[in-house]
Image (spheres, rainbow, N blue to C red):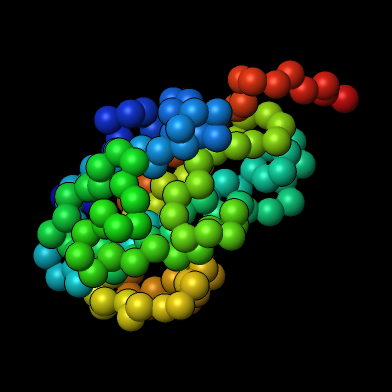
Length: 164
């Protein structure tokens, strides 16, 4: 059975509701997963946007959330989960907003894609001070047992942009 990642808040390929973005309360969306391999020792979750700053001319991948050390027995994360509410053993890395936690979609222009990527690992990653996506990806090398992905999209509704 392949590992899957879903959200009751949006389907893969559809728009992320505003409550999970900078135009709402900026809550992390609820997530559920299944099919985690039996030999998994920990899970890692990375949420990023490869369309920054402009989907027509992307120049970088913007990181919105980094979690690691999630116990394999956990089957998901609740809506709006904060650092203090994470499952025992889980750690929050630093996102590109420069804080540890979830930073929702807030694209400056156009409709962006947001990749929620869950990794099943054969190791428990040690706690790292101010871990970044790059740190976690380096530590995961050679230890990924399975991978699942959920993609949502978002375009700001509160402002109109002039297109060239």
